[in-house]
Image (cartoon, rainbow, N blue to C red; front, side):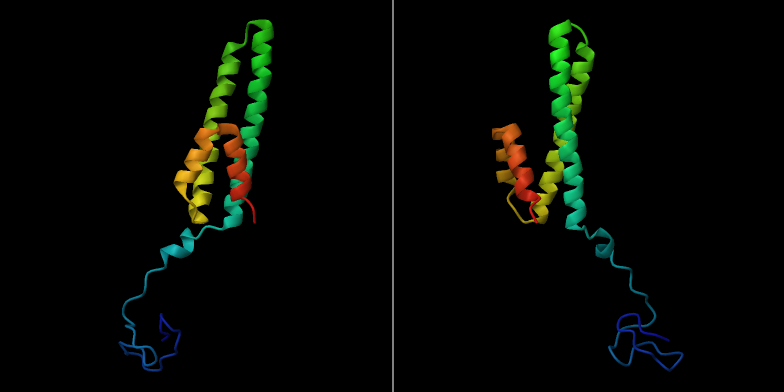
Length: 133
């Protein structure tokens, strides 16, 4: 038998405790949940970068469809759809930036005030600050 805690080889077949560390051999330890929940900072930064690019493209698309709407007096639904996409992508980006701030042990209040005080510049600033390696 092999101890689940320390990996010590136990020669007796009916032993209840490990000779080396003293842990019980009858109860298998549950697998650690934290190993699965560990988040790699590089993956979080990659996700934030993808959302940042989505947000920037939504800004550009909103600007283009606003110009089209202003010139042709039509296509209001496309403009509103892209404006909605801009708002949703910004909310997703802010959520990911908040996760990065929590991982880096930074203040959530500062992040919120920066992004809602000056929305576009604050989001750019927060993204650059939180994704630096």
